[in-house]
Image 1 (cartoon, helix red, strand yellow):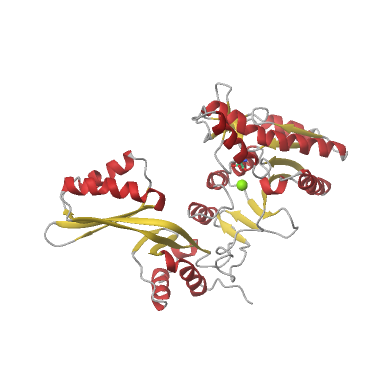
Image 2: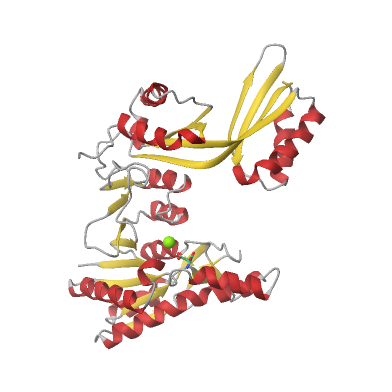
Length: 406
Ligand code: ASP
Ligand code: MG
C-alpha cells in the first residue's frame, strides 16, 4: 500500500496493443491497494520522427517551437492511456507537463526541472484517480513548453516521485534490470539486485543507457528508490538506492567499455605556467569535450601532455592542437583514434586495497597494453586499443568475480 510512480519508455508504449498491456499492469498495481501515477514516453521512434519533420520544415528549427512539437509525442500516449483506463472502469486523468505544474528553466530542448506542484497530483490521487503524466516536458516561467533532453521521461518520473514523496519510482523498460556489464559483450554478465546511485551515475556517464543520468542525480538528491525492471515480465529488476541500504558485498559491481575514443599527445612542450591553458583554451572554444588528461614531466624543463576526446572530434581536435603545438614550441603533436576506455566501477573500492593492481594484472595476463589510466573514488578507467575492448571487459568481469554461475 503506498504511492507508486510507474514510468514506461517508448518501446513499452510502441503501439495501442502495448499501451493496453501497460494499462493492465497499472490496474494490477492499483488492485494491490496502491495509488499510482503513470509517467509515459512517446511511442518508440516518434520523437525521432518529429525531430526529422522539424528539420524538413526549417534549416534551424526555433527551440521554442521545436519543444512544443516534441511534446506532442507524449501528449498522444498519455491521453490514449487515460481513455483505456477509463474504459476499464477506472477514474483516470492525463496531465501534460504544464498541467502537472512541472516548472523548468528556459533552456529549450535541454530544460532542467526547477519545481513540481505536487498538490494537484496528490489531490487527484486522493480523489481516486490514476494520474497519467506526460514525461519529457515542462513549462518555463514565460509559459513556454519545454523538453528535458533525450531520455528525459526518466527524469520526469523521478522528479514526480520526489515531489509527491512516492514509496518507489518504477522504471519499466525493454531490459530487465542493470547488468554487471553489457550482456552482448559478455555472456556471463548478470543482473544486479541492487546498485547505489553513485555507481549508477558512473555507469550512465560511461554509456550504459538504462537511465537518463539526470534522473539518477535527482533520485540521489531526494533519496527516491528507483526500481529498473522489464515491462514485458513480472520479474524483479534492479533497485537503485543509497549506498548504505544493504548493498551486495561486491568490491566491483560493474565493468563498462566505451569505444570511439581518441587521444592527442603533445611531446616535449616547455614546462612553464600557462602551457596547459594554451593547449585547452582553443579546444574548449571549439566546444570539444575532453575526458582524460595526463601530464608527465621529463628532465630538462619539458613535459609531455596527453588527453582524450571522442573519435568524432578527433580530426578537429588534432588540427587545432597542431596549430597550438607550433605556437608553444612543442616538438611533436600526434594522435590516435582507435582507442577504447574500459572501466571498473564499485563503491567497494573505497575500502579495499589492491583493486587497481588486480585490474592491471588481469589486463597484462592477456597481453593488453594500458595506454592511459584515470581514477575517481569509485572508478578506475584504462585506455586500451579498441581491438582489445571486448576481451578486456570479459577478463575484468572474471577477475572481479562477477561471472554468473553457469
Ligand atoms: N520521448 C523522449 C525521447 O525519445 C523522452 C523519453 O523517451 O524519455 O527522448
Ligand atoms: Mg528512455
